Image (cartoon, rainbow, N blue to C red; front, top):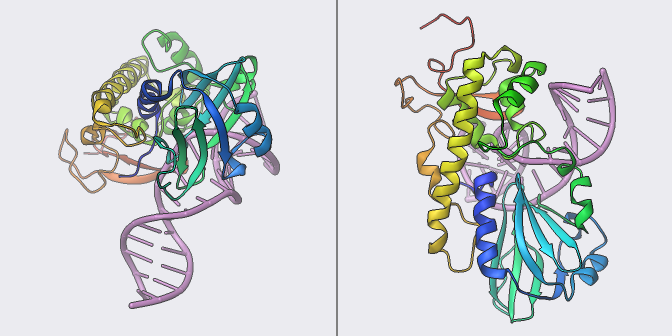
Length: 283
DNA sequence: AACGCGGCCTGTCGGC
DNA sequence: TGCCGACAGGCCGCGT
């Protein structure tokens, strides 16, 4: 399975980066793929030289490298973006897009097979003006994702629930994998219209989102120690997926063959028996 | 204004 | 065998 970073994976990468490069100083930067940067490559390289990496934060699926002089490097891994730290001079993998040379002789590399990832260097005060972050929804946690909020925005949305859950402006951090998982856990059909969900279904969905994301973060967290210098690899959580990637397999709940359809332009796996549309009374 | 959809990317895989 | 289209998918930007 390919590495597809959703919130738990990004959190794991963040933890790894904090262990490896928090407090390090950037000597120089090489941009090998200028398209992924929000400003001209030479400005990017010039502004980053000499900066200290104070810490790495996360918001939704975005990594926020907090730097000295009130700068933040915002990094989105998209599909397959990975970070690794190696000694300077060691062989670089194919598709290395950006190299941060550190003053201690190591280098932090960003590599991305799909070339989809994005980086933006901005002042701290401008982070939440960036496209995407300017309208990002609450984190999927007990404290931030309130039932009343969910009920209110879901009541106003007429799209299919799968599309709603993928929308980062409604709830931050869910991607295709965890959407299929929480819908299966909640026994909700991915094509059910969002405003048609009952209070009980909203309650179940909320509880499963919070529980699932927390469990995935915990699982990835436990594998962190097995990595010495690369934090882009997936953890163990793929072993706990019930819906995603299980097309044509038996539903773990009822034994029915799982089906794959397209919803909101995304591959969507679900159980046609456990996850019926409202009003579908067939077996 | 909310929402759908094409485009961005490259590696992999199935079909002929 | 080799080619080639379909597919994978997060998010931006545009059109309705």
